[in-house]
Length: 353
Ligand code: SF4
Image (cartoon, rainbow, N blue to C red):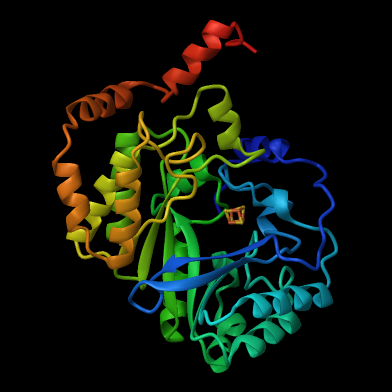
């Protein structure tokens, strides 16, 4: 595996040595939202199980990932079973479930097989479709061949982020590569399971123009390998490299215009592509210069319906000449600074701090 050791170590140095004590028997969070795991918009329960976290944290972290802020030490199998029970208590009549873990559900050290079996057995009668997330190294025939026997239709989500290995290594620090993703996608297909591919829109050190091109290129490479693709625009999480760059004005968040461009292009090329941005129109999430609630709502609703015509109509009604000029200008810079943030720092006399 190819890693940029210096970059990786720098990201590691930003991670807190100690995380605040958390109750290991309660999930990080649970809520309900809309998704389309069964091919149409449906109410979907989401749970973030509290675990010891991603195995990659032992070495570093992805440059945008701050999930390590939510982990707990010494989470036992009994703790995980209690967390599972609270999911069942909150499920109500919802029969579609997405499970996140601040790491990989399929990592047997993070979510032991006994707890996995308890979870899958308990939900088998009440859940028809389940989404779980995993790094590629845990997607092996031996580790996942039993998943189908429990009943729910299973979609495994992989955070590929980009199909470009240079970006994976020198911007995202994923500790993985495209070849591993393709191998994992094949395993998933062989077992008749489903695959959702996460792509990250605008990782650090890329202009928005280049980031849009990377998403389109990545979508073309992965669209035949899985069930659907989720384009996740960057959001700023605590204690990460991306937060560090953003705070000093050396990272600018992507725009909703850019996200809409990707979705429109990808859907025209026949990709099943969705985007449900975290923190949209907020300071730490994807946004335009001025908040645009209508555009954000259209991104959600068109993703859910898989009909992007209203989004296309809305974008066609805008004059984007200024945005297009900005894309070209930003792309010519060596760095892609957040001009507004930098100007504020210069005015406050804190630019060199
Ligand atoms: S693999 Fe996932 S959980 Fe692990 S550091 Fe990267 S984004 Fe975070």
